[in-house]
Amino acid sequence: MVQCSSGLDAAFAALSDATRRGILERLGRQDASISELAEAFSMTLTGIKKHVRILEQAGLLTTEKTGRVRTCRLGPRRLEAETAWLHQYRRMVEERLDRLGEFLEKTKGEPW
Image (cartoon, rainbow, N blue to C red; front, side, top):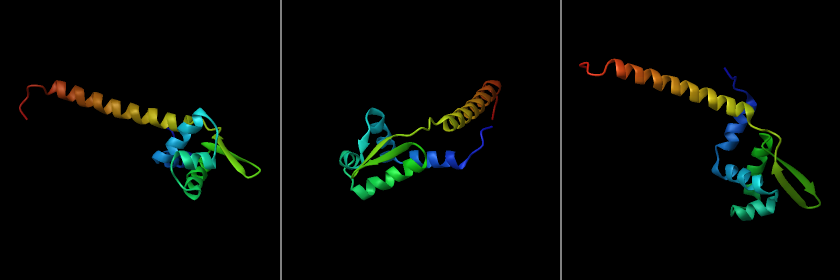
């Protein structure tokens, strides 16, 4: 069984927001500055910086400051622990559905 960790919690918390998922999708195509992200998502600089900080704390993106421009790019995390947790959860749900299917097959035609 995969153990939950603060990294797993931080990643799922970061991914729970549609704007943050959108930022990651955008950075998957090309690095972007904070200003470019704010414009793309019609947000204030302060608002986008909050999202970037959460993603950065989860290791999902990195930032680099050159002069007055802070550039964002995808981080080093590959979400292996999160993927393993999702696969484990999916297996559990599928096993339960299989057992339910077997039960329904066995009791088919029986009066309730």
